[in-house]
Length: 131
Image 1: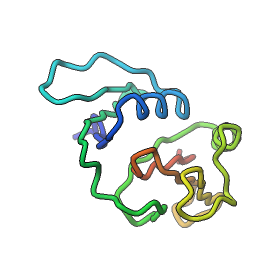
Image 2: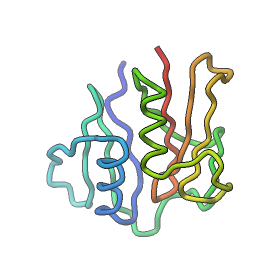
Image 3: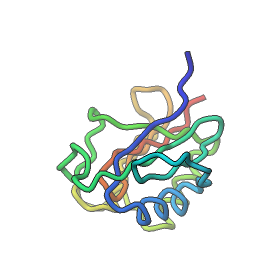
Image 4: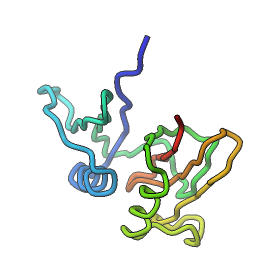
C-alpha cells in the first residue's frame, strides 16, 4: 500500500492554484473531466488534488493546531525552504490567526525540523526535513 494523493477542499480555485504554485512550486497536471470543479498538482511521485466546495472545509479557526488534520511536504533543504517562505511573507512572529503565520520547530519531538502554515482555505500544511 502506498499513498497516491491528498485531497483538499478549496473555495476559490484560482487563488488556491496560485498559492500552491507560487509558495511550493508545484506543477499543475491534467485532471480528468469530473463533474466537480478542481485541479491536480504533481508533487514528486505523489499528487495534491483540490476540490472546490463553496461551503469550505470543516476548519473554521484561523489557527495552526498541529494536532488537527494536515498533510506534509518533505524537503531536502529545510532551511532554504524556510528562507523562501519568509521571502514570500510568512513570519514566525505573526500573531495566531494571521494568514502569514509560520509555526516553526527546528528541533521537535518528531526528530526532524517542522514548519506549519495555513493555505487560503485554512488547510494546515506541514513542511519538514524528514529523511
